[in-house]
Image 1 (cartoon, one colour):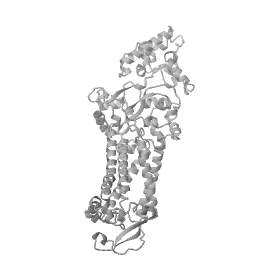
Image 2 (image 1 turned 60 degrees about the horizontal axis):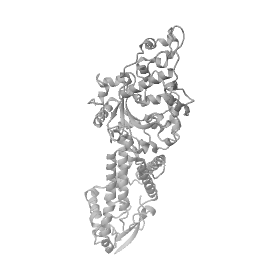
Image 3 (image 1 turned 45 degrees about the horizontal axis):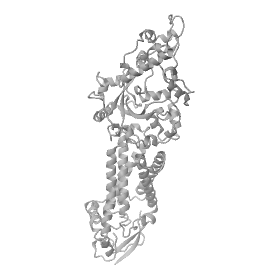
Image 4 (image 1 turned 180 degrees about the horizontal axis):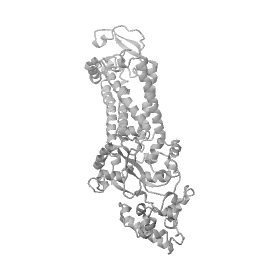
Length: 358
Length: 233
């Protein structure tokens, strides 16, 4: 019965997500969790209950799928005397609802190394499309030290640091597929010389003068970024100490962690062809720590200069216009020997008579 | 009357540099083609092999270029004399040479320029080599080195307009070199025999055809008897 109830709520959640695609979870109606959040949403509960995990950040929780199915979907059978009776409500096992994922993950090389909760806090978890690339990689970095990761990859991967900055770990270490380019806005304090970090909602809100932050790039508000809008946005970014940072991100995420043999072959990404790089999104931070994404006009990644000035994938994001210019230069060079050689052949007798080739 | 005379125009260090450079640049062009068009071109097997070979050839050409410019500037001290066109070259020399290549050559007239140790290149060669060696090659080397270290040099990339600016410039410069290769190799066959200009780049000696009859203006400059060997520095 309990299982059936969870499956029911799971399907309810799927239906809600499907009918709200493109909308932040934070904008979805929350389930009636108020009774629980009245206490568990207070930061001081951790001290009172002597348990750090007792506190649930209401903002982050409201952005999760789990908030839609409600607290009691996982913590059923809360005793009437809770919390005074000292009886802790049971916790659901992730596999109860996420059976196929659980099975897939258990079989992977990662399965015995970490539990679901080690990577996904069930009170904060969001689908990858509502997360930034840095945030997803941050979960791996909790155990896998970034410096050591770069060192180990440098043994075989050219420009390992660049690759690790521009890819999700799961792009190569799972069979995730359907790659898109996620473009996020990064900023830093002017003159600080520090590294760029993902711009916060507050920073972008300043730029938009209080309007919806998507307006700073989606000027006409059609929920689609045209190439002209992208160029205009990039033009202004430089003066604001900001940049647009691209990451190759899978749309369909799997949990079968392993060393993918075909990822040793650079051509898996670099020879994927320009058609594979047509789909891109601008990722914008939301008020509640979540992210929304706005689709960008096809081909923006391949624009010569101002589409994505700091994102380039050798082999795959080459500009057709530049290819044509390059081909014309080479053709001009080739045309000289061809044309001159032709006339040289026709007039060869003139030089023979003179006993002088040149 | 004519007679042939051997002139030593290309010293050994320059020849070594030339062939090292030639081999390096051809390798760079072919590997570069695979790097940019991996879905169409696969000469070296794995993509990574093409990248590593490209980087290695680029490093060899960069070192070779540094030695070349060091040799001409410090040891031979003849860079300006050999590679910078004179005012006379710009006023008339280039046009006279172009006139020869595009018209009088076909009529069987002799080349107005004859290589000597002090004037190895004709005015058009001087202008072309000046652009190639002192502008395009340094630019392609610098852009190539930057592209080998994208993450550490990210700040520099931002100052220069982004990675696409660098990649685009590097690609177009490479196209210029490819175009130059076709023209360069073809023009080298325009000697008094098709291999006449290739031989001095192999053994250093160029066979010059000298007009003994001084009635021809083109032969005036070369009518004086020359020593059999003139060391070119």
